[in-house]
Amino acid sequence: MAEIRGLRVEVGGRAIVDGVSLQALPGRVTALVGASGSGKTTTGLALLGEYPPGAHVSGDVRLAADGLVGYIPQHPAAVLNPARRITALLTDIARTQVRHLPRGRRRVAARTRVLHALAEAQLPDADTLLHRYPHQLSGGQQQRVVLAQALLLGARVIVADEPTTGQDALTKSRIVDQLAAVAARGIAVVLLSHDLDVVRALADEVIVMRAGRVVESGPAQHLWPAPRHEWTRELLAEQPKFQEPQGAAGTGGPVLRIRDLTARHRDSTHGTTEVLHLSGLDLRAGESLAVVGRSGSGKTTLGRCLAGLHRDHDGEILLDGTPMPRSLRDRDRAQLAAVQYVFQDARAAFDEHRPVLHQVARTAMRLRGAETSAATREALATLVGLGLPEDVVAGRPGQLSGGELQRAALARALLARPRVLICDEITSGLDTITRRGILGVLTTLLHDRDDLSLVLITHDLDTAVLAHRIAILDAGELVEQGPARQVLTSPSHPFTVSLMENTTRLGSRR
Image (cartoon, rainbow, N blue to C red; front, side, top):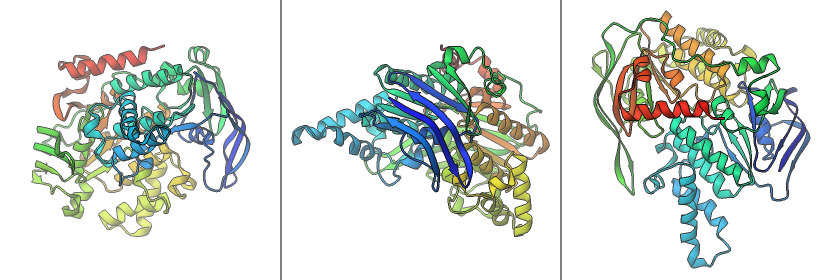
């Protein structure tokens, strides 16, 4: 059991958590929901004794005598050592669990525990994955590696901070099953999530937060059908399903063309592994293209190839008919500005030591030659237009929530005035209200700028259907493409059918 009573956390004289109380009981799932910046993560980290730098803390946090707490963070790359292979990251933990065994049995026992944890975390093909480094995994795979670490620790309380962020519907459903199984073993689960389908499927108790305070709480079976607080009703409002995209699809010639693209990962143990093969794919000016598939299907690798971030590939990527260099290091300033990439993990994409406003403005200075004062004014106007106040963006990245940083990352890319904007799961860790705002900004941009094209890499089918066209990837192959609504309402490939069935299953649980 774990308990928080009257927690208040102040940073710089501002209360980011104010008077929060909760109980995490064995075998129960307690969910904290709320918009980005509402204090969910700060509350969850309090169970681990972790607080923001310079925080003034009051209130009580109590754990049972055997209350080892495991943590699954929202941004898994931040806690995975980039210089060590996955096998080393997991085996180090497993060895601590088998120290009581005779020396000759420890190695086999540790490996058995690692393989079991990977299976529980829904990570197949362990022999290949164990020899990779974190950067060679998709965001979803990284998330599940961290889940495996928590399971290996034998924690009695698990704080899961957006554990399904960036996951496809099939994997989400499996993680829901796994966390339910964790709770069934008598482990307390504290779930911090924007994904309301996941919360509906798992939570026994729900705590709704806004601006650091609890506005409503209670048993899930009572809160979901009849929320009392106006903010809860707004947060739980149903997302629009299968809407037609705003504006017409691009009608001009292709701005970006992909021809015979084959991308690989390399490691010293298994050599070369082909992770993506596309014979052809076009993106027209003014068009939005959603790229959908399971974690590890090649979606992010495709986006990184387009942006010059993954150079180990063959084939051609043409911008307005001109081949683009494989590496961004070989692209000129105009080419760098033309194709911009917004990362899934916005926090890792910012320098933690410099103000956010300065980092956003620098894009216009570096890629467009703008003067400092003009770039700063444009950056501030763009950030404010995305809902970020001036006093917030004047701070360093650590002072912003994940959702606020994601909007700042989008603003930074827009300051390059790109022809192609690649958005890699940028709504996967956002609450419903912020997600609607970000998607509204993107559709407005497409409507206002007929020279801008958008690539949406996403697991969220309600996001994908807002695009003009959709491309479905499975195991590195393009298995289906076409108008988004047509593909998602009348899928023809078995994988797409499975994807739709699991989305329906997850949304209908409980």
